[in-house]
Image (tube, rainbow over the protein chains, first blue to last red):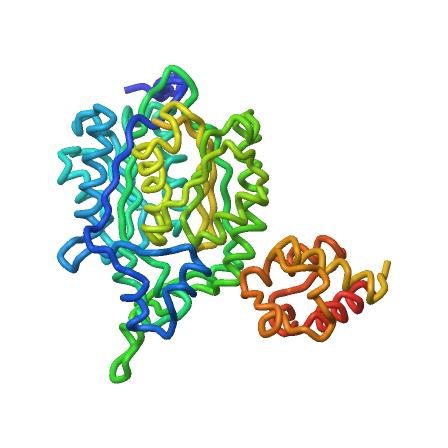
Length: 341
Length: 82
């Protein structure tokens, strides 16, 4: 047999020109944990916690509810809101830091339980920035023709990875799940993502121990790998390094801050949210997400949860432009302007 | 260019006022940010970053946590401006 004279050319796919968020879903724990309850484990007060964080209460899931359970609830609501059958989902991306199995990814179970099989499914680890990373991936998957619809879930059960006696984090962390469906669009619905990382600060927010320390701990006890963070360093970075990023996302989308209807930053701490908004210099008409007040810091879930609440309570209009920005462990960050579903 | 002690003090007083709403006159040399002015760590971090911009100096975290009084900050900035 003779060799072909010309090299074969691979067929490639191309998707629609634009992608958009088609629907949003949320799951919040029933159990409301007050500041007074948190103060049973730390020497603090309701007033101190409100003043430093803006948090009045948060939700903790019960022991029998897993990250996968939470993600399935939020994902099902997002699919229903988008009017997309699970069978038309080509990829499921779960953004999380608290799925208690390093492998396999939570996303495969989420896809299976929602009936989205055999969708490609994987988890994204980018701390509290992971949801915005996953939205970037989803938009490119749709526009590239790899997937028609992508389910993106931000979910965290941080109560499993919180040291209740840690006076710097015990009152911050909480549980929840938020999800969006990203699909094809006739008009631009997801602006360019500006993102990056600064691994020189990898230790500022992290699990305090590694799995290897647990493996090697024969006789002595090793602390559970609860999340820990250096609050002041995080505050400085989150406000003063993220404000220019927010502006970059606005510029990349070819709009001005005055065109925004909503600003939905990661719900890290009310003080960060307020200071970041003032540094970005948003006009007064831009609604600022403050879901943290009763939800706490739910890491990867915080942006879609806040988006869900703003739409449900009429704080921001469907079709309005929202600036999303996630920032957290890594240190990782990502921001994009989207059209609200 | 190095600024005088009084110029720096005035600038710090402005920053404290903008960040916390405290009257500028309350920002005196021997006052402690935490104990006397009741400024918490997050507000202090903002004041430090704004001071870096205002006075053209760098105040790393390792140094800023040792700046207890207004005088400490003024002296640090004066030295950093060299």
